[in-house]
Every structure is written in C-alpha cells, then in structure tokens.
Length: 100
Image (cartoon, rainbow, N blue to C red; front, side, top):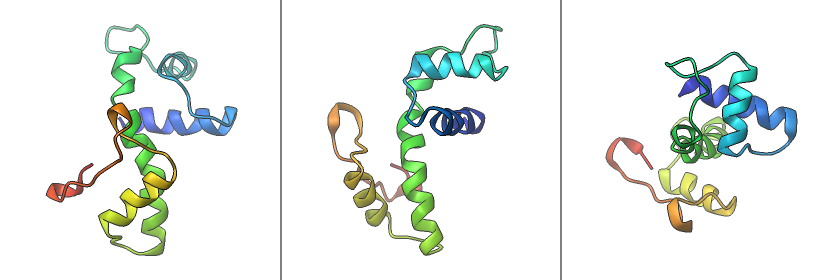
C-alpha cells in the first residue's frame, strides 16, 4: 500500500490531478511495479486504497500543526475538501484505532 501511495502522489505531481484507478494501474507499470502474477495491478484492487490516500494529506497537514490532532478536526478538513466515503457519505471517524 505504501508503494502505491508514493506512486499515486507522483502521478499527482506530474499530472496535477488525482489518477483514476485505470490510470494508476498503467502508471505503476511505467514505474516498473506489477502485481504478483507479473500483470498490471488491477484497477479494482487499487480503488480500495483511494479513500485512505485522500485522507493522508489532510491528516499529515494537521499533524504538522500538532502531534496528535483531534480526529474530528481531520474529518472536518476532509469534508471541506470534498473527501467523502462510498456513496458520497461524509467521512466519519471511528474512535477504535483512529481509523476512518
């Protein structure tokens, strides 16, 4: 997942926008990264990571301001950026393990 995230951020730096799953799959191949079977990583596999990837930036920005930002502040920042969960539901924070 960490390697996918780094390539996801590289794509945004290079193209100025978030990749679609199909674009990220092709971009991973360009970067020499393939699935276990030697084929491109399936877009459906990559889609499951997009929400955590989107949340990383606001979360990291809050952590620059304070070592342990309140989770509701991160959720509010996600909402202000239009980061939503499946079916356009607002992001919510679960107190267990600080997971979304």
